[in-house]
Length: 137
Image (cartoon, rainbow, N blue to C red):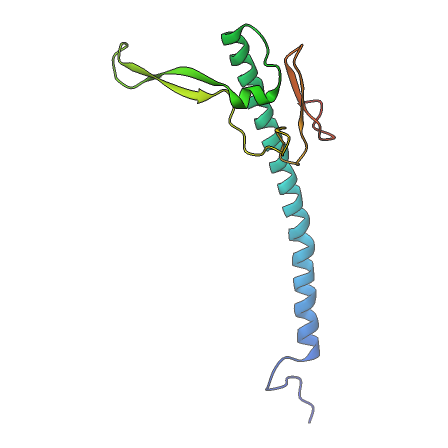
């Protein structure tokens, strides 16, 4: 009499089917995860560029010049108004840095989501990422 199942465990065919299903799932999930991670990094770079550009504009409006470097945005503070009451006269001020960043290297350069630095032109007040593919944003 031929037995198809071993009462103590799985047969070789069951193990092969399980491995094939796991392999197919890995083949589908990993590329999708990598694509989503790349899209998240791109979105983070775009967001950081927008924040830096807004900070440069605010700095220029308040100081009449472009910052000498991006480090100046991190180091200097600005007094900003804040509304704390319902009427137009109740307000306060708070001190905040022009730019708050997440990642800075040992030289003080601001790094993007890919670990590359941002390029800044102090004459024109323009900033861009040094990451290939993100440098034209």
